[in-house]
Image 1 (cartoon, helix red, strand yellow):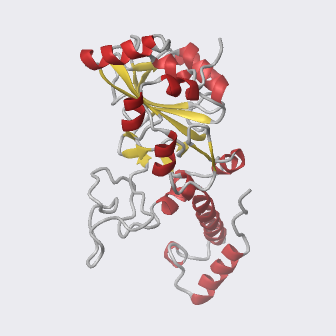
Image 2 (image 1 turned 45 degrees about the horizontal axis):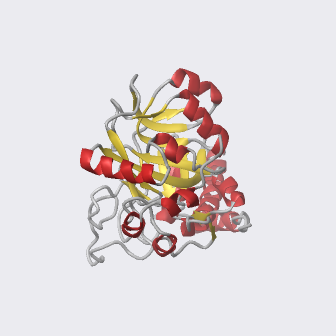
Length: 326
């Protein structure tokens, strides 16, 4: 089957949907909403973080990248930020701190509490976002009638699945729906796996897991049900979506591990890699010292109290700098 071009489909869609982002962002909107992206872009304007950078991200764990994503936040050290209050993830606000997040503060990029398919296998790629909503007949009928007039056929999960490219991670907002919220079974999951080489994120359900697991594809999902996708309508393709407590933009770098999912804005990917290199070097030094069994944990972790030990740790970190960006 010929793969459908996303640019072709967007060109056929009615103007108001493009202009108001109820269906997708225009190219100009995509560029404006991801203006800090330092990399090239796809034809529709979605940021295209290079494959070489994605390979490096596969070496990270979420905790190593989290600091760079929240580096501008005024307070808080935990993950979360679910309330959108402008406070740090820890909830409390320090005296004298600004009332909102500081520049570069992205506290709402982590989503946890998932069922994980093939745990232990990293999920890394560029976010391709999809939004479904509960069916409302008048809206669904209007969407479908317009799609049929433009020769698009029935709007469904395969409409977006056939737009995927290598390196994409499809991120699906199915509002946590389980019964009737099964985005894919084994055959469409296999197609996604072979097309993208990555995996998927479904804030909803999957089924036929017994046939998907042997492929080795990583996936994050909320539950399972035996029935097919139903009573929903496709309302957004490559728009901002909510996944748990995270706001996800098209082109964000998806990092999934045993902890959950981190959606890294493109301009923070290299800072995350740099921060991780320093963290890895520091952790290596601490564990090497612990291996000698000559120190109490408080003498090494967090900051060594002995100036000589502190200098030794700093020298070790300097001797193990982050790799340069490709």
